[in-house]
Amino acid sequence: MQMNSETKERSISYSMANEQENLLKIRTALVSVHDKRGLLQLGEKLVYFGAKIIATGGTLKHLLGGGLPAQSLEDLVRYPEMLDGRVKTLQPEIFAGLLAKRSSEDHLRQLRERNLLTIDMAVCNFYPFVATDSGGHSSIDEVLEMIDIGGPSIVRASAKNFHSVCVVPSPEFYSKVIEELEMNRGYISLNFRKEMAVKAFEQVAAYDISIYNSLQRRLCEGKLFPDSFFLSARTYESPKYGENPNQKAMIYALEGVSGGIPSWSQLAGEPRSYNNYLDIASSYEILEGFEDKPAAATVKHGQISGFAFSVSLADAYSLAHSCDPEADFGNTTIFNRIVDRETALLVGSGASAEEEQIKTSKKDEAIVKNKPEQHQGQPSPVYTEIVIAPDYEPEALEILKSKQKKKIRIIKAGEGSNYRFDVKVKQGVVLVQELQDYRKKLDPSKPTVVTERKPTQIETRIMLHLWELVRRVESNGIVIGNGESSTDGSIRRLWTLGVGSFRKRNGATKIALDNAGERARGAYCASDGFFPFSDSIDLLGKAGVKGVIQPGGSLRDKEVIKAANDYRIAMLFTHERAFKH
Image (cartoon, rainbow, N blue to C red; front, top):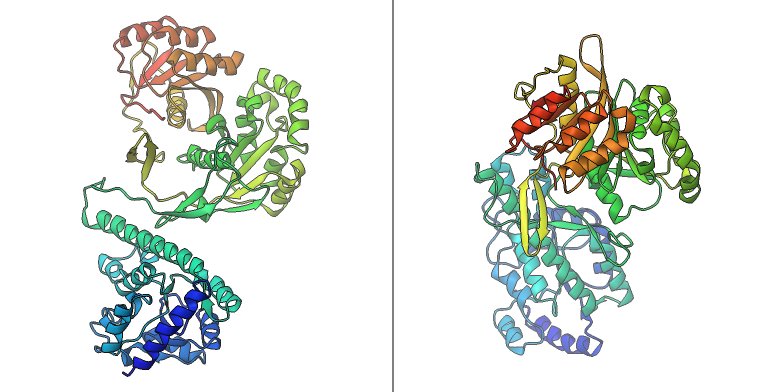
């Protein structure tokens, strides 16, 4: 192939481009893509401004089929495509054209001596490895075939040589490329080439991390934690600020992960804040494992304000809200069933946040004094920040949209994320553990009765449910609650009366009991850790609590059991703790 005169012309054009504020004329574009969305529009613009397009197999067919002139890559290289397409772009002629510095006369001389072409733009995206792998149904052979070799190599080479080449690593950038070409009459600016180079290395890095994480999981069975731990995430949303106005923040979505917040949709309301994301995520986890009955929870600052399950969603919400109505101001409410009209009428307020804060205090006082049965279906309206549910009946959705000056953030949630790790970054270390699976419940045969009074079967079932709930409470966690049984002995309704979290076990107990008030009489308690002293049992006994479930294992277990016996409290040891930090 005779390219001498053209290569010489490019050397001159580089100097001219340099004089034009580092603009690069696009004369030849290499195009090799798997995702062909928007390619014809980009191709048309390249051809309009006089660029020659060189393309590979399927890409060439697509361009020609769209009526665009394009030349086959095989016309320019020594070796044809081989090994079922595994080798087609890995050619010296291609990479020399991409990597040659246009500012280097020596580089250009070497190209001239070998009759090689310089390439000004590389349009390339990769095989869909992540999409193939994330479904969980692909075989190892299918996944391996989706590991792109030539594509990332082209993108890396082009990005490295951004002074001389513009790389376009995804269809998401085609519109920007077209704008650049139109604005600069067929040239691409240096600033834009820099931007694309960074995006290119971002995409290659994310692609490689996805491959590593997948193969580590598939090929190193039995090794839960890899020797190197990588996260790959892309910008998802930019909130105004972080936890506080003085903190800048960004929300990222994990790549190679299905389910979770990025796959959910917001149906109405204001944009979500950084703290909203924290509340949405923690709220979702609270209802995991309670799928068998209509359930609701109100959440504030990531902590359970109230929880209940019942025979209907409206009743579950009524019971949950009754636990701590004052704490529910500005709460996140989550449901595990489709929200109906009756439930929607109970949620949120017609007033603004400021108006609601003034209105609710006296109504909430009355609610706290009553038992759940006495105010069922008639909770005080309370200002609600977020509502989360799997879906909404049309009328229910319109009711929620109309409340609080249309500001309630209404989230339609689907499946939870399938990411398997809990990750925290603290002072230069990354703490990684298995994600707690709240659907794996305590084996009912595991707890042992350690007190003189034996709990009834119904009492045991209530306490087991409360144990599952206290697992979601930040340590030291205490839950006071109660329930009702059906004729068959199963628990048909269960609700919290007080939820406490504190640095001392007796402090958490005091908080939960203070919230429960007189309602604690005849109720039950769950603790996420053992009681180090008997003082908490004294508090619970004096309040009239009938049963306690806790891990056991304290040096003072005998004293704790004695105190429980003194108050005729039935106590279960689970023999496992449930800390959450």
